[in-house]
Image (cartoon, rainbow, N blue to C red; front, side, top):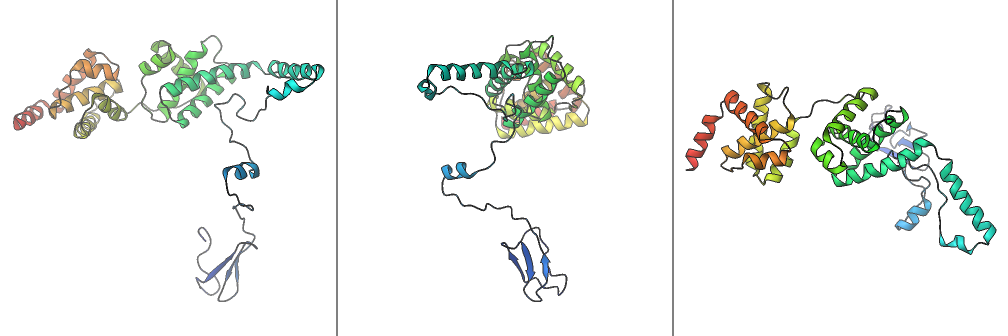
Length: 307
């Protein structure tokens, strides 16, 4: 009887009986009806396999922004049974299909194409369903506000996906979105800033720590090096070295320093390729971390001990 009264208010007894048929909770000691008219949320029918469950279920699939009609629309299909009709009825059927397509609005036609592209890019980047749903919602709002007009559909899709990734703290870089969508990353960045500003979407800055597991996995670094990189990043955040710096660059530099400290040397070129930044960025962030956090001596001591 989770969520109900645990004790009888009349006699203080905990010997209560739940009568599911009447929707009542009764005290067995004094007979007081403690609760009545309770709602039964369970099924009133049984199911023994998936087919029975599908037949008896009264509700359909949940609404989703990843479909242009949110999953509520119906369509005139094209099955083999149609060709068994006479010529007049068959032409009437095909005419209905054609008119159903024609009466759809311009927004619906735009969403049909855009959401297909959104699913393709999302699948390529292996994004979770929550991010795909959020990005579809952002794109739908952008279309309804007329923000897509004058811009390529692909760039707005990529901008919506990047905004959804940032909101759900799923680390994806502009370079990755550019590779998946075929749009220049500067164009994606401009579109992303425009739609978030116009739609009033508030997005917090990316946390460099979110990128550490992905970069460490790509560089095949040990868990100890990964933990060390997180420690270095936390020290850098306390020293305010991360403000005004790109999250991917500072995360990659922290991994580079941690790899050196644990004698798992990786070249700056390797780290830069994984993070999608230049070697110059890695070198500059690396020098800043060594100087401000005084890590040079720690690296030397660690390597001497192992030698």
